[in-house]
Length: 410
Image (cartoon, rainbow, N blue to C red; front, top):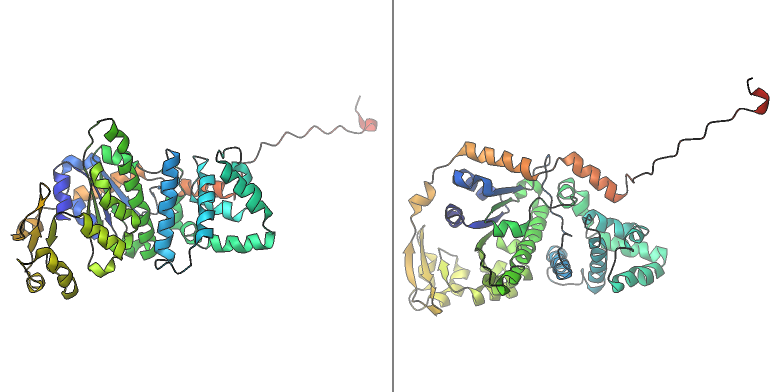
């Protein structure tokens, strides 16, 4: 939190994903008033004015596939982290075709994806918009040829992976909005301060992990889109991403961030408790790409792993017995590693930063009014897209009744 606060004070663009919510709460009280207009507070527990995240928003065909691949990786992380067969190529193929179909309509959300899986006639409304011939053949040849009983069985298996994210009212109101509350490209380009409060105590651990897994690839995608600026020689600012409880969001996208996104000035700071919480791919990406290593006090198992980074200057016993506020550091300067050295941070300054409670309350209210949408409006749109309230054509006025000839008055 102290590092993020320094970046904010220096006027940098910052995003913080906090699955506990406590760091965001504390940070709000310490942010300089001069940065008030730059703050975007995404509070996932705000059920009265939820902020939207449309997972299907894409600006190009390449971005569509990037979003879909990230979503599939997200499902693997949630349902099949050890690749035991719960997920598989059939499910991946279905997800790709259904999401590409929904993306042909810019107003689509995850509600439409769910309806495409459950309503066999809904895909017909997208056929005129689908430009990919393979996606069209999927619906015309494959889906249409599956017997009704078998199709229902397959769809139950598919929808089980989506159901909890559209039936839970908190998630539905976030994912069911056709327009996202903020644009990640603008957040990075304009040096905004994005604070993401994913408190597990308020929205549940599964929802917290899901939203975090959703936001990380969106930030990565925004960073990679800077490539067009890089090729044109246009300068763009650094952006700093902080992620707490990193192990909950450690998908292959993070390996991409570590190996590629830094050339697009996306700077990553992650925090977690133990090295063993990371799988081998992510762990190798971390230690293979990080140049400067700073280690505060660690446990026995981690000390054995980190000892090689600081040997022969410091041993694992030194790493275990570090006092609070002290660390060992090995830096990378001009491409060359420096000898390890000890460092003491100004702990008193960190813990004594003044707080402004009234400012924090004002910023919260400002953000929810500026970026949130009333839950009633969101629910009405969801009902429309889900087919519960279909638009009806105006009925023609009935023709006047003509009385029998024998009763025509003269």
